[in-house]
Length: 435
Ligand SMILES: Nc1nc2c(ncn2[C@@H]2O[C@H](COP(=O)(O)OP(=O)(O)OP(=O)(O)O)[C@@H](O)[C@H]2O)c(=O)[nH]1
Ligand SMILES: [Mg+2]
Image (cartoon, rainbow, N blue to C red; front, side):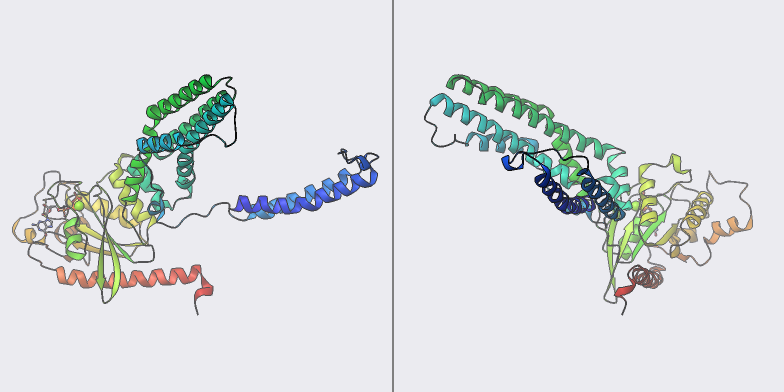
């Protein structure tokens, strides 16, 4: 928009420039009475130079405005509907064949070549216009909200979004160039028969290229489907994000706390994406997100599921409910969970935080003996963690409902505090809105 604004300003500034130039020409030119265009003399260039300066100044003003606004979340819900490539092709062929020649051409050959050129032109446009629409309406990844930018990268694979859009644009360009080439051949035909032949050739070539490369459009349709299915997040609504190692019971807790019904299974990485649930407490709405589990490893070794979790924590204003499983059931030792916990806590120290020790029904009966336990981790804090979890952690079981009611109360308090944060943040961002 800023670029367009800049161009408009330039155009406005150019009007006096052209007028000055023309007036000078009319005053000085010996040819003025003949109404011929005369190139301005050197002195007259001064006015042009003046205009250039003005233009530059105008451009600078325009450039000071940000060229693109980083969008809020929700871009995926605004993606255009993509038609399957076969539908585009058949609809285009049907419409093109219905195009009739310009009225009033008596000569048969002329009428036929007019019809052929018009039909090919129509086919080319019917194929290219939807593709151009997609190119214009699928957002550039760099102007997406950082959270959605990460989703594009992590769910589609790095660079795939751009790759698909590029293929669609390449197809559009081919359609335009082939369509124009054949429409022009039709227009040059010398007989009715030749015009018909050229028309058939052109249609066949366009059909062939669309059949061969239309997969790009179908890929784009899939991309849109995947992105549209991403959970909708409202940045103004407080969000609770459940984090922890795989298989510790995060999804089970999401089911207990919210409307979200994520899959629960006894194996790691059951949760393979970001899932949203909602809670209504005292007439207030809150969001809950379930995330894939995090393992003890460096960022370079993390899989895309773990990266999704980190993207949520990095880019969304969430409160964290960190889930610790000390029962030895989940597959990640308590000492490894402690390391993950310390790392995440340090990294996201500005987030509101609550700790939960899950599966406490198992803790009474089964002592924690875990084969991958680190023998060197004997210091007090670790020993305490293995017994109790972090200080202040709530012990919960979704099996016998122990601690669930306390957890709900604490989650409510946490989300109310998160709401206060969001409100004060938005009043800092828009001081004039506060009365
Ligand atoms: N005994 C007992 N088992 C539980 C409890 N909570 C969850 N489980 C079991 O733990 C296993 C993992 O639970 P999930 O909720 O899928 O764990 P998760 O952390 O979401 O797992 P991922 O999505 O794979 O990271 C399932 O078999 C659950 O039935 C609990 O309070 N007590
Ligand atoms: Mg899960």
